[in-house]
Each structure stands twice: as structure tokens, then as C-alpha cells.
Figure 1 (cartoon, rainbow, N blue to C red):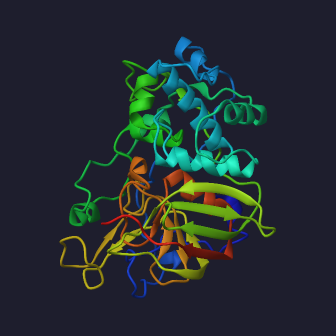
Figure 2: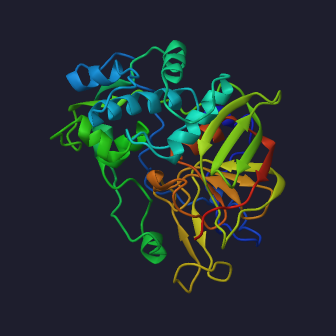
Length: 362
């Protein structure tokens, strides 16, 4: 994230009031920021592009399209390869899980449209051939769990809207090394476990198989962001109108809709705190104002892109597998890694255009 300093007056910790229509709390000056134990971060260099040695990994790395195939394992293997290649091409399927779903369909359709293919959202030979022609590297690689991966500190699991308990924690860190590693490599925890049967992810020095996911950076600045409320999709463009990335998103709800029209990026907070203010919010039970510390399991995840529409932003989430599957309280929710990727390249003042209408109820 250090490259962002020249583009933004970065805020180390931003007090957020959640997505309502009243003014947000002002960012605290840097000298008054309270230090908390550092949260484990998924933002690390991608593993070397050396194919994993396990037979299953080799099968997935070589998976091809076969219209006659009926084996569910073969279908899962192809999905893992396609999802990972889409992720690396910046057409995010959300969590890489080896399963069919709306987010994968949207990513495929967007990629097909960008390559002048038939944009039907289906996995075809033409799609797989185009993906692999542009990126022939292995999608599964070996990784050795490091002492830092298992050192923590880790946070206890709490009920999702127990804001009072959250506010007592020194940081909203990952719960387990498994969660940390899955998020680092853009994976569903169940898929990571399936690829590494019987592995204890809390043991440093253990060799595991992971996806060679994207690097959470873009090679050009983002000058315009389109937020499609009907599809649940965020699209990023450069100053020349070239589409740089597409992400699945949870965008408001019919009860708590996101804004409409054109706004702009005001600033970026790569480690936001979250302020629960009962005088502004219509959800949750606390009666007193609370501040929840930063971390990947913070209610707004590990990145907040602040918009000129007061208290609204584009942010991460502690539940990546639920992106575009559950309603939000009005803001735009991405996986933590997609929010970090977008944040790494977005220009201050970039246009943010909300279009369509929410299709999901709270």
C-alpha cells in the first residue's frame, strides 16, 4: 500500500458510521490514533509460479473443457482453474471455491464481453482456450506455512452484530490460520481443506497447495467506477475508458438502498475502524456509541474507499463468501482482496456512478 501515499493523504484509521445518510465522524489526526495489535494481513507477494506436486493439483492445473464430461470432480477441477485465471485477469469471481454460482457467471460474462466472445456467462471451450492463451501458468502451487502465518494474534469468533463484544477487542483479526491463508489466496476455506486433506494449518513448516491468485494490484489508475445495483457488480475504468477490473459486490438492499447518480472518491482508509452510532442506525442493539478496532474481520473489512456521499463507501467484508448473496446497509461490499486491489489504484476524485436498482431485500 505504500505506493498510495503519493496519491492520497492516507488515513490510517477512519471512524465510520455505517451506510446511512448523516455526516460521518471526522478522521482522527494521525498523532491521536490509538495503536492496536497488528492484524494479520493477506497482502503478500504471490507464491512462485511453480506447479504444485500433488496429483490432484496437477489434474486441476491441466483441466480442460469437455462437453461430454459428467464427473462432478472433473467439473470442480475445471471451475477452480477458470476461477483462478479470471481472478488473475481482474475479472473477479469472488471467493475461489470450485462451485458454480452467480458471481462466477457474472465474471465469465464480463470477461467474454471484453474479449469479443459470445457473452453468455457459460464455460465453453472458447472461454477456456482464451483464458489459457493469455495466461498459461499453473493455478495451483505449493506454499510452506510460515511462523508468521500461525503466530496471530487471532480474534475470537463473535456473533455478527454483537458490536459491544467487538468493541472490547484490541483488533478485529482473523480467527484462525486457516481463515488467514484462505483469504490470502482468495479461496474458500472448504476448498483449501479439500486440497489439503488432514492438514493442520496451525503448524508452521507444513507444505500446502494453494491457488496462485491475483496480486491485488492494477497496472493503471482507476478514474471511473460503475456500480451496478441490479447485477451486484463493480466495474473499474482508466481515464481512457478501458475496463481494468470487474468485481462482484453486495450493493444496498430494497429497504436500505445505496445512493443513485454520480459521486466521487473522497479518500481511502486501508485500515478502517468502524463506529456504531445508535442515533444514526436502524440495525443492531447497542444503545451507546461504540468504536470497533481495525482488522480484516471488522464490519467493513480491511479497506474503506470513502465517497463524497456522506457515510457511504466501497469496502471489504469479514464474510467474503457472502458477497452478492446478502443485502448490505446501503454501502458497496467487496471481498477484502478486491477492495484492496481497487483501493491500490483508485484516483482521489475518481467518478463513482451508481446505476440500476437493488434487487435484494434486507
